Structures are given as structure tokens and as C-alpha cells.
Length: 523
Image 1 (tube, helix red, strand yellow):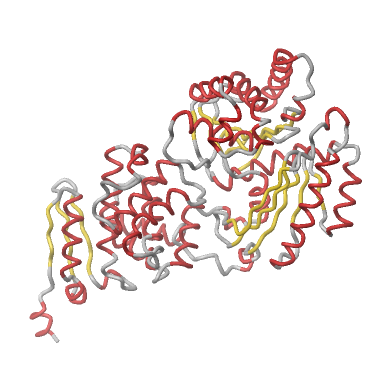
Image 2 (image 1 turned 90 degrees about the vertical axis):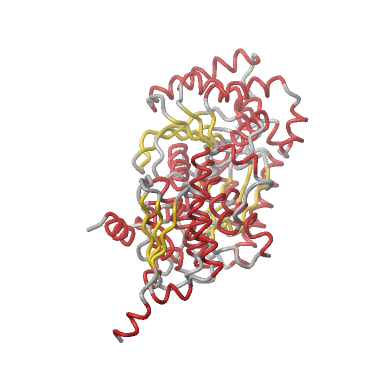
């Protein structure tokens, strides 16, 4: 059995196996609505589609400040409660209009800690019909960590979710959530600490040292969840002139992050707010969040800091997923869902991957999954104007809401899809983004793109009916063996694209044609 055959069989069992879209347990996720009633904001998200990577059909947030002043009064902020109730009435009406019969609504620190929390809970149910589930800090930590696992299937480290009144920590690894704890380190709580910055620092340090004993950090990666963390990451991008403004899977070293925290402390907050488009309510909490993050880095000593756009809401979606869907790769499943809804020939991506596999059979597993995703997405922008397909492909790959895809992976995927439609990448508006890849990675993406560009010329159910590829990397020879059917398809355009592929491989071409006369005599 050849390597190619073994890999193909593995694909049939795993990532390119039976589609799950029509499975009843998966179709139940076709339209899932969740509402997160937090200390600072109330947000409704509706997930649409049964893919492993969440698709946001609807996403709306209202900055209510429900927990503002809670530490001082032990009651919900009256103005925030009015705004939150109004938002929930709107969300209930929207859910009915979308046909969402059972929407999950959870409330976190503010409602669970306020003495009038039960009364607010009852009022919400009476006036909106929504059942408000008040979860404790341990459950909040678990759900946030599950949201990170949805986006990072193999993630290992510590999830840190900051809200207005609390901060939760959870350890994740091997697809599971283990140790977890909660703390009163939300910015609203810290506003009530008397004595200024020195007293706040001592307060923060004391709590984090207790959490360190509980969570047991060991030079782990830290995954940051929460709006205040995301603003800090966005400011880090601003300071570093980082070219890709996608927060999910954005990575920072401890040193870079500390430099950014120093920079924020010296900057004018109103100027930073304008530069990043951050709301006034959110920016007011950033300085206190910075104080917490500085001590977290100092005490936990992480190897790397990652930003997750997925948190408690995605954790609620993950909670409802059947195990067979959880086990799938979120990138591949999202690409499959996109192909099923947008490609001219759904299913051809799998066929194209098999046809091109001999060129990439030595690729490591992390590169191979990007190749699979590219093949699935290679024809999903065909409705765009031909002059803009290449750019649209790149934009879709680099800016789409995709889990399981880091920033270099986004650019690699985007560049490969760009070359699916265009031989030359020079002079595009994406040049700055190419700096996230090495020269070798840029060349590999070009080879993949030109391979897909050529393979798409043989749009058949089974490309083995048209021909096969054989790559000899040491001799730098790419052999195309055509069938009789394939020879008829190997016209001028296909020949030109094959030549371009061979050139990108820095190789020689060997095209083997069938003996048509001999075939005719045999018949």
C-alpha cells in the first residue's frame, strides 16, 4: 500500500469522511441563540449552520454597565438594569422573529452577587418570557474555557476571562477543562479599592498568588477572553503596526505585552479610543484591566499570551455539540460548509485534494490541513467579478471568522487562494501581510495556488479519469500522465497553467499522452 493510498483512506475516515450536515443531532444546531448577561454588557448571538466552526448569523451587544457600583451598594446599577431589560425585550422579540424557540440566557457575576439579582431574574422572565440562568464562577470559567476549545481544539494552557466584576481562570488540555477558579478582579470591583494604585496592586497580587496555587501555572500559554483584553490586544497591534487586524489567535510575547502596557499608561486614552474605535464605556475600564494583566504576567510567567474571540457564548454552543462534531477540525468543517453553500461543484474540493496530493505528500500535518482547506475553498468566490476574485479570496481567508487558524495560517491560505486565480501577487494591497510568512512559506503557497489553478481545469467527478500527477522532488520532475479523456481536456489554457505550476516548483515537466491509435485498434 502506498503512502498516498494510506493517507486517502485516513481522510475518508476522518476529515474528508461522511458529511455531518444532515445528521439529526447536528441539524439541531442549525439555528442556536444565546444571550450573555454580563456585568458590563448584554449580548445576543445567534449561531447559524451546523459546522464545527461557529457562523454568526446575528450578533448584537449593548453596554449596560449592570454591575457598575455593585461592590459599593451590593445592588445592580439601576440605570444598567433598565437598559439590560430593554435589551432583553428586544432580543426576545428578535428570537421569536427568527424562529428560535428555546434561547439560552445566562447571567454572570453582577446578577449572581447582587442582593436584588433574584428580583431582576424574576422581572426578566415576567416581562420577556426569557428564563435567566444565573451561573456561578466555577461554571462561568468552564463555559469560557469550552469556548476556547471550540476555536483551539488542541489548546493547552490557562484560560483567563475578565468581565466587569469578576475574572475567571481555567486550565485546559487534551480537549478538557480541569482546574478552575473565580476572583473579584473585574474593573468595576477594582474601582472600589481605596488607597490608589499601590493598594490596588497589593490587592491584585494577593488574589493572583492564591489563584496561582489553585491553577498551578507552569510556563503555560495564557488564552485571554473578554472585551477589556481584546482592547489591549488591539492597542498592541496599533503600537506594533501589526498588519492583520484579526484579534482571534493574535499572539503576544510577555515582553511585547509589558511594553504595550507601559505605552498605554503613558498615552492619552481619548486618542487611543479614537484610533481603535473603542467605546467610551469600554475604554474607561482598560487602565484597571492593564493593572491586572501586568500582575498576571509577572506572577504566572506565561510562555505566550493568546487572544480568543471565543468565550462563554461559544462555550454554550460547544456544550450542545455532539461528540462526533466536537472531534472534527473546525477549519476543515467551516471550509466544507462554505463549499457546500457557495461552490459551483460542491464536493470537488475533496477530489482536487486527492489529485494534487502527490505534490504535497511530504508536507507536515499542519500544512496538509491548510492544503485541504484551500482545496475546499478554491471555487467559492466564483460569483465575484473575475477582476476581483483573487482579492476576494484573500480577504475571505484572512478576515473570515475561522477557528483553528493562526495568523500565518490565514495569510498562507489567503495567498494560495489568491494564486488560484492570479499568477502574479506583486503590487497587491496585501503586500504588508506577506511579512507574516517566510520566503519558503510564500513559495509553498504559490505552488499550492497554481496547482489548484491547474487542477480546476479538470472539473470531473473523479480526476483519476483524466490523469495522475507524480512528483520527483530530488530530480525536480513533475510528471502528468493523461488518460484519453484527459488529453482532450489538456487544451491551451490547461497547458499554460501546468507550465506555470512547473515553473513555481522550479522543475521540469514530463507530460505522458495516451496512445490513441493503439487504443483505437484494441477496440
